[in-house]
Length: 388
Picture 1 (cartoon, rainbow, N blue to C red):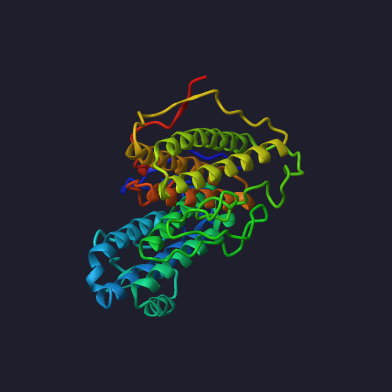
Picture 2 (picture 1 turned 90 degrees about the vertical axis):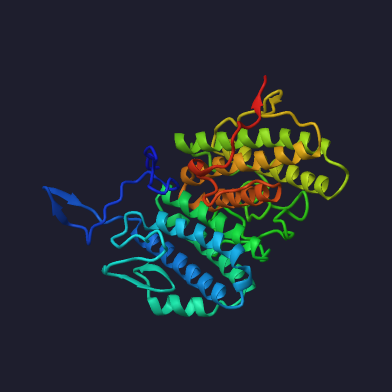
């Protein structure tokens, strides 16, 4: 696997980009005696920008029409989409969106009108057609969900860091969809070979329907890829992949412990039921990573004898805060895992990222426009740490 470079923060302070992108008009251009290569992420970035432009235009259509009364709710979501677009457009040979959300100037392959920012390399007629098909808030929620799904389909073709950004924005799209009333589970259009194609039913909050179900809001398998037994291949994992999997396993060990505390402090009501479901979800993810590591010949890390909580939990409010904290911290872990896993396994980690982002919001986390990118993380204290 290609080694990922140290991330650098963009002007917006949101995107972590490890690959130095070259905006060139074609491979083979000579500059200072060096061969400049076309950006291999260019097609994926172009599709991501075009999909975001279609959503922006749809928001404008709804806000100007039947959704005018909910503009106060819709505008912040649209603002997050502008931030997504700026992240995807970094390095593309076109004008970046202005602060007001529209592009200025004339560049090849880019179009702009009063409805939103320029579309890089996309058919403006197709974008306008897609926007025109969305006329209500409910349809806008469905469009966000479909876009979240479409981003997952591009995961295998992206570089590790762009894959992480795609997974993050897909999770954000899913959060938007839920906020707009669309609770249909997000499923990848073309599931990776290592992931299950069957999504478990989810409730309005994105929680799994039963302890045996897949992680909340996720299509990730609760067992080793495709089976209920460890993976057959004993091929050692690359160091970066094994390290990221061990980190995910350690985080799930801590989450299982933390949810034991959460459940004990909640009254016997719906919140405790949700906590039990989340507990089972984290047990399932823990077992998935443990089997994957064992199947590759690695020794899965064991749970610590005990964990130090990041803050005291004395009542139901503290329990809910701890649950939100656990899930928010896990989004960062799964963002790293998306970038570290082989291309054909990224969907599983992206599904886990989305599930933790949905659960974090369910428990009251303020959230972020880029779940899984630590630069934008809204957490302010450490996760439960081993005590022995």
